[in-house]
Image (cartoon, rainbow, N blue to C red; front, side, top):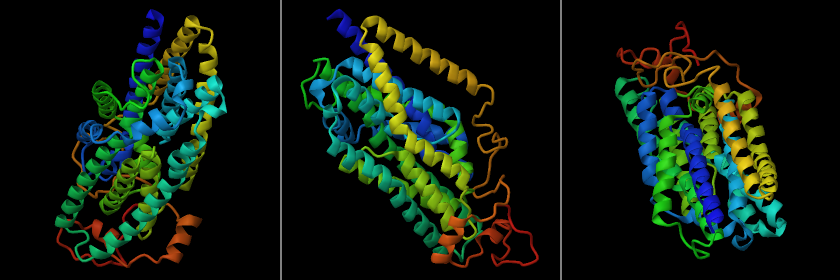
Length: 428
């Protein structure tokens, strides 16, 4: 009993460590567009996101129940299996954070759990119907739905706001809209991602005999998971924020507002239905859709391709690591200790590598962010030629004729918003 209690405590601590990495890994989902367009200063943005992540963790337990009751057979799971699953998820989160790729923490957790469960109890212990309907199908549908919604919302926003485009009141309005929509995404993230750790801890407690099968997460589990993800969010995953905010496309405030609102709607709807949705997939799809929705907008498909590859590798890579960790844990206490040492050593090595090129709130936008930035101000980024996909979308759905980009150069001066053929174009 003493040995068992120790492994259960290790599982709970490791689950909260995963929740912490989930927080800083997914901060970009809520705040990347707000930071990149200058609607909020970086540190203030992550602080607001942390608070709302904590609040969101208390709003629902549907996703937690999907993980603790639906994905795998509780009767065939031991705490060591869950520990192995968390090892796979944490290492994948840290590796993708190191290279600045916004992959799915949710799918890393799912992959680790599936791999460790299969290694321990066989394929029969995984509920394939739940995996398909509540994990895989939402993974495909979420970025598509969010992307299309954001693209049409961007076009509608530019159409409705073309008369006031470039005015100071318009810029302030979109800045406020971005802050509100970013807060909604943070709240939605708390209702979805924080619950995954709640579910994995609840599953461990059931496997250890501390809770009865089919139990909901205890209050202390909800509180600890909410605090862990909030602390991770406040730390700020600046590398991924840079990729999401500047690496995919250059966003104006109108696009940021459309992208965040679309993503938040998809995430909240999925949380209500109990789908273990990837907020990363939803927000990334919305950002790309918003990039395609603006006249002349360009999506950097080389970066998007790297993201798609990472998305495809997340489940199998975490599953393989989880299965290997479970195999080592079978050797008893020394095997579990060896896996724990490997996890700590690998995490320290990844952190040391990250120090070679530090990305933080002062350079997340590729320049010094210590001063204030006006909403809508364009700060960096080279001219990019439209790619094949961008051109194709523009041909199928002609964008509205607006003077947003030309007006951005004269915003706040009182000049008319009409285009001037002789004036140089703003850098996109």
